[in-house]
Image 1 (cartoon, helix red, strand yellow):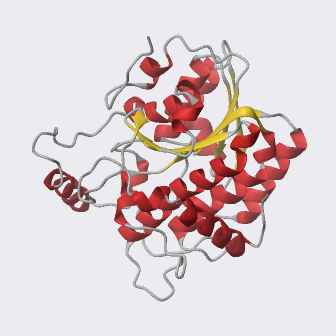
Image 2 (cartoon, helix red, strand yellow; image 1 turned 120 degrees about the horizontal axis):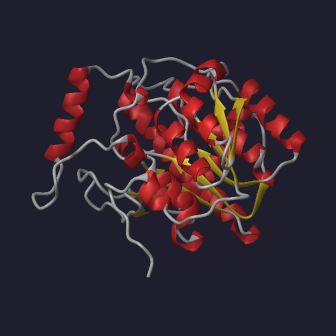
Length: 320
């Protein structure tokens, strides 16, 4: 009988008894928080993890314990990847392709949350450009390295309920910038990217899914003030059904649990093309104010195709 996991399950609980020896897994955003814990948990079960980070010095410090663990089991290495620069993205992908070593899983974990208005090196709105377009180009460029039976796991968020993607004005050029709306657009894009990637690659045995890690206090929230953080929690609790528990922050090992569950534990057919939370596939959220579940627009296959086409247009590159 398979084990059942939930909101309070940790990475080590989810991976207990799972032997990942010989598995090669790429994780972006390994300089803090969930990315570091994801790498640690996978290496602890014997996987070789390639960790990608914008600031390698910071990542080396943050992953020192992971590197030490990898001396006795699994393996660990770092590569430079700045998702806010397509030059960096393409260079990182080219280097991986030149090395030619395949991956069993890619976990697109890195991201930014609710920064002031700004743009990436290529002129895209910071959140859409970093969270979605950077990963879109990087993952598609290394897609040929994913083994049959491999998986892509995109980290999204319950924040996808803030907004659908805006394919007419993705860079807020004609609409006032709102950091929460920008975050919502980028997190919806992460789900839609997984939906379309899954559709395109499942015939070759490669599946894709998106996950919500839950609310965790990490560097991701560095642009939010304590007041705005409290207001967010209050809003979440107001939208919690009377028979449901109040919002609780997760620990980092609890927050990374759904990533590793979707990557190496859950059946591929269960999670492929889906959105997962608390170590299970989420149900459609008919009531947009309720804090659990997934909005229908984020799983819309036609919307996913349209986003793919728009993303190709924006980055000036087409992917099979």
